[in-house]
Length: 196
Image 1 (spheres, helix red, strand yellow):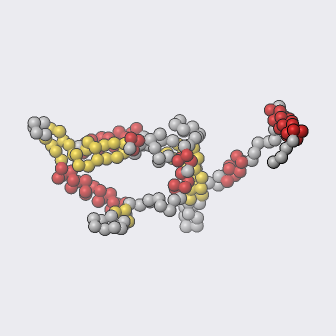
Image 2 (cartoon, rainbow, N blue to C red):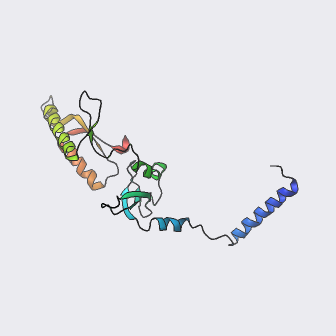
């Protein structure tokens, strides 16, 4: 753009005048974006949750529409930070801000799967079958590899062939119970999602 000296000063004067008027309180009214958001979310169901990504445990508010019945399937349409949550006070990191894409991703795993030995395909399992299979395999491995005493004859009660990875956004109570269960089984390989 070609601008001479006189035009440059006119543009600067208009900009300075406009910003001065805004600073003196003659600004235009606030945008209607906040009102539109409240209107959009007026008929939704609000659910509080915790972000699943890292160990910080940021609070979320998820908004869903639909009655969950036969007519309209309930679907999450908006996710934002929880302003009342003591950890994040309404803010979210970029991964947390993109949770809506995570929820609606076609690649999101929603049910347990198994790949049988020698197979190259994943097969869907029901939750009860998956939990029964995990319990059975854990029992077999613990019975085969449990170490009750070491070489000196001291009681050690160790199970070294299985490890456990816990969730980092759990409550203190859930973490306490998880720790007690894992340690009572003799598992020494016990870690948390926050350190992985």
